[in-house]
Image (cartoon, rainbow, N blue to C red; front, side, top):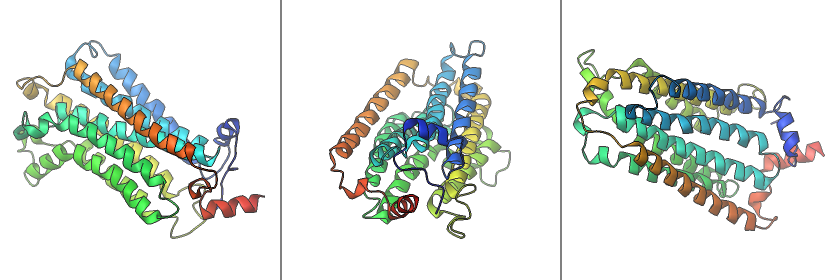
Length: 320
């Protein structure tokens, strides 16, 4: 209801606004600071003795790269989205692309360290990472397309965007759901299929993240009261970051507890294959974002998509 920035701010104004209290300030900082935390974790792990030279560790490093990228892309999107309507959409296209790369990044350590014993070398294991790569294209395309429906069909836009990120999450976590089902009620008799407490915290944070994104609580219960601090998108950011932190800890737990058992299995995807897959998916997502950006740039300025929402229009009128 309040706290909006000027809709035609300069890049400098956008940066300076992160040090002023607006309804985006906490959104910016809740992803800017975690970017440095995950970068620190990446450098600390990669700088360990012999860590990079050990092929067993490569899937973890590939996971940490998009884990650093997605909060940074989100931070930039929230910072520069008030430059113009076109800039706003392009910023969030890039944000969605970073999230889809993160969904692919999750697939590498899950395929390497977290697969149930009965799935190893089966069809799902063999096609797990390629399927996650295709899912990332679907995620980017569907979420970017949803922005074109925001004004004319806001309900459909919300459904498409939620589905675009829910489906890759459910797919990536299939190994964990299966292991959870195997171990339900069996206590400590699960062997290598047992999940750590970090897995549970990660799944809980992910569930809470999705709930906050879809429900718009608590601000829908008291419109205006949570404009600056405490609205659902800020809580969504915090839960997402906590979920990634616990996911990292869970991956490290699987790496340690299952290493001896995995050593008896067939070698996982090598570094060349891992990097090649990641680069191909990055290139594909860049092309998808470029296509939507080109469509946006070709749209006339009278296009409803470039006029802003009714709420933003009312805010602009009050400012004038």
